[in-house]
Amino acid sequence: MLTFFVRRVIGAILVMIAVTFIVFVIFIVVPGGDTAQRIAGKNATPQNIINIRHDWKFDKPFYEQYYVMLQKMFSGSLVSYTSQQNVVSRSCREFRRPSR
Image (cartoon, rainbow, N blue to C red; front, side):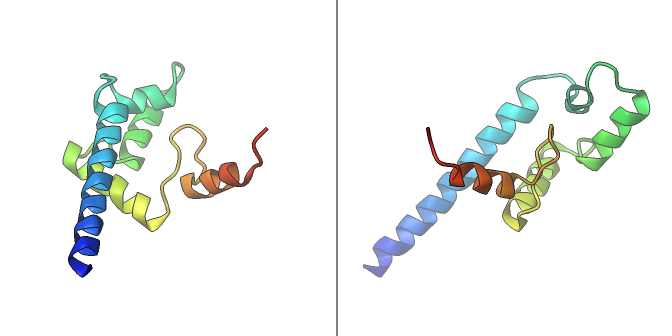
């Protein structure tokens, strides 16, 4: 019974890592172009783009960006690119809202 439980936990961890990696690749790498430029919008100043690139660690290598995202996700400090709201608190609020 213990072996079954351990295998399930290890399998769940591997699935979580795979899903987070796939989602990260889809949202960061696949769209192409500069992610900081997309977040800043059409009327952004060059300094604004540089600040976003530095704040969100887009100036770091891909694997380091992924590691920072995992750290933020597991510490509960992951925020949305667009609204700058905490993802965990926003998700909890949405799940508590009754469906119509």
